[in-house]
Image 1 (cartoon, rainbow, N blue to C red):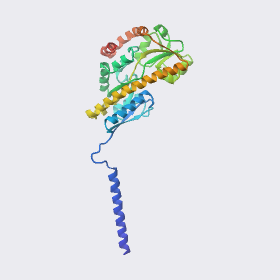
Image 2 (image 1 turned 90 degrees about the vertical axis):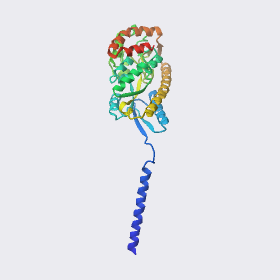
Image 3 (image 1 turned 60 degrees about the horizontal axis):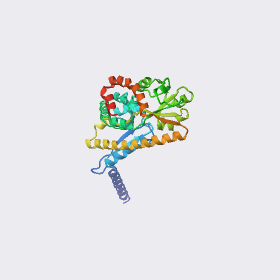
Image 4 (image 1 turned 180 degrees about the vertical axis):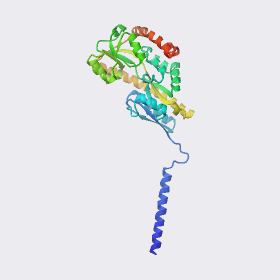
Length: 339
């Protein structure tokens, strides 16, 4: 009798155990007809609360909303997935899906982007956006695809302005012999040499010290950087030269892009267009507040007149001709015609 009770207990225990395992398996399995969510990793080396970060978060919001939750973008800020040059390689290999890349940094991979790095080629922000959203932008996007990058849209990175220890830079004569730290692209170096300046190589992290010690006389950055890094403390004369307007590209690897259906691709394009306008408004607000803070903290400011800008751009025109031979006349002429 005892043996029969023991066997019955074992049998009951076994049945209960099997039922629990079966129930657990059913809980973990997806429901019939459920769609697997597609997740895309996006790399950015900036901060989440800066305008680019705000725009990227808007992009992610729009993609999730327009796909009814079937597609999601996970954003990794602060270079968590690597610096831009490293990520540009990983995008092509498919280990990272998406990224933000400054077109100046990306020009080594997509040569036509060098057209965006010619000093004074853009007259104002509206001119630059007619170019980015027009035929020239399409030519750049087409070349990028041949290199493994699908550009969804461009983001605003701001106009770069000159700040100096010695005074305002209102005429080319004010640049004569001025030791100025600029970005390293050959096109930018050529442009400033044509203006009579003395480009001086220096890492970005050394600019403040270089100015305070007189190693350099001037440098150039967008207004949020001039304010945020307190460059106005050591170079208080800020001239709104707006000599460069280099955008950022929001892109996906071509291989990843080609896995999407036409409807999914359209969701990404539509979402990117919405995010672009949202991001541009955020950057404009930051530029305005940054200038207000620079002035409130003792910085000095002047903007170039239209006639003064022409004097600068006339001196750089031979450089434009040089790069027509390198990049193709269609790119440079296309920018000039959009003025």
